[in-house]
Amino acid sequence: MPVFEGDYSFIDAGLSDRSYAELPEVLVHREYKDIAESFKASLDRLMSFFELPLQLIYWSARISVIKHIARYRCGLSPEDDSRDHELQVSEAVKRVWDEIVRPSQGTRTVSFSSGVLATMLGDRGSTGIDPAREGVEAVLAAMVMASYAAFETLAADLWVEAVNRHNSLATNWMEKNSEKQIPGAVLASHGFNVSSSMGTILHSTKKVSFESLNDIRNLYRQAFKGAMDDAFEPIDDLVKAEKTRHLFAHRGGLVDRKFKDQMKDYPEYTSAVIGERLRLTGPVTGSYVAACAKCGVALLKAIDNWSVAQT
Image (cartoon, rainbow, N blue to C red; front, side, top):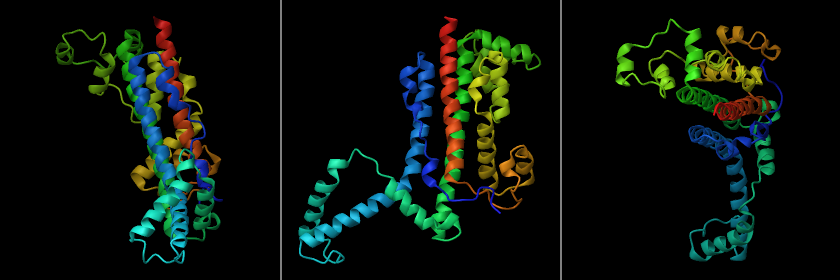
């Protein structure tokens, strides 16, 4: 039995809150703005990927209607495509396009497309067109993987940049990790002046790791002495996003014992069967994507504000 039953509700996988888009304008420090631009680009690309099947359905239907009208105006049966290559018909298609499409080019219509997609998927994925169902599941999994990767990259780049800017953060971290010594050769390569590069040095020498959410949270807690803890909320959805990302990236979505053990504290995962593929739905995917976006926004704003307060 799949963990997440019910309709796919694909439309719910999209981000309803796109406040991340304003980050480059509201942040103060140029270095953080650059990180925000990259984060925004990643999430914008994710949203374009999410909308692709809906747009394809919408435009295939729209173009079909346009061709039917154009053929009819040329005295042909709307279903007769045998003369579409002729100049008269192609010019008629262009005129109908200008009449119907151009006035509404700035709008996004997904309600029709989502309804058609739901019909293709069938009742809770148990009927319908198999390639459509499998394709939608692949899109949902890719959205979780891409959103967590965007958050992980932001968290790493932001920590490094903040530690580069503020020596006090490096001091805080070293108080908790005194055993991790930086090789003298590395210090010498910087002319023994590391006042603006400690974050980069710690990262490049692998003294710090951002490979797990737990590592990331600990690094921020150590450097900022807990001042950034609230930025990682909602932590439960962020943890689920991380573990789901790893499951699909390393196991193709097939549940294993490690995943079962990691998710034992979350009741909705108790029915997961080892060896079965984890089934995602729109609402579940949407909550994980939203958590990654929200935490990324919160971290950027919190650290930008903290840096302002230090000056």
